[in-house]
Length: 379
Ligand SMILES: *Cc1c(COP(=O)(O)O)cnc(C)c1O
Image (cartoon, rainbow, N blue to C red):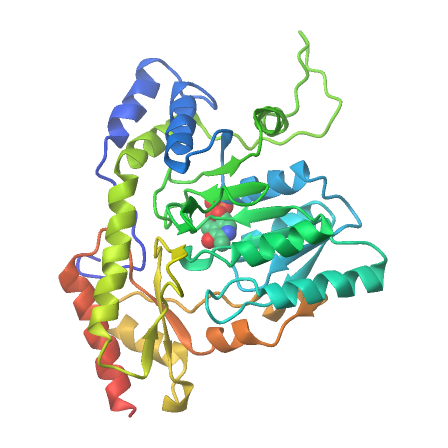
């Protein structure tokens, strides 16, 4: 295990233990408590917005985001097809139906053209508009939010940003997660910072944040006995996990800077290899955190992502296929899909390279050299 190069390994090194010990000292080994409050304030300060609610997972944040938007049984929700299943599963938790929209080639995120086509077509077929739009900033790359929000506003449909991979990314100088009506973050072990497991919902107002907090703590009414008028959820982040988050927030700017440095180093390593393209910011409006550095290779070379993945694995290097689009998943086989196959083409000719902030420059160069050697053999 020692010399294996991992895709995105947790990177501690702030004062996580200090905050966890605080929790133990005061017996705050419970959901809620001072670490949760502190972690939320740190996130608010970093994002430059208020109203962050810390939760037990990014998936929980996406679910509560949909609940807050009033998504219910019989509704349709538009969701980016090129993503992890956790972007779409909560639509089903609500008894609603996902409608998948393809990506465009610049950002690999939701195509504004396909989005508009999906909205007008669903209105024509079902007689009503989709209830919400879930946009993802995949691998940290911001989606084309100006175009997407303009379309969403024109039809009066709210946007929920899945910023699980994009903490620290900016679009037109604004932090991802704060651009739509609601935003979801993840602090899973492989994300840019971790709480070992956790997430957060970014809400538009203090009232919305209060309501979200009420729903995620079992929707208990303010009564001396347990009294419920609504269905609640047990989705709050624990005070111990939040302690890890407090330590991680102290080093978040460094972690983001390091991921960007690693991306830059990969770009440098591949600059003399025309068959490999490192996915990068399309214009100065986009500033990805480069959670993962991803590459596309020329399919004419005649190898598959699996060939390259296995070759790297044989050298003790962990890499991963790009996300398999949701319209290509058996579980969503019945869902409508709008697009031209862009995400499927990306899926078939790309790979995620090791990108954790814990990697050394030498390790990054080792990975790049291994990819280059493999590609050159196929020329
Ligand atoms: C990680 C991730 C999630 C889910 O977050 P969890 O904290 O693991 O529940 C959702 N969407 C995307 C795009 C992710 O990468």
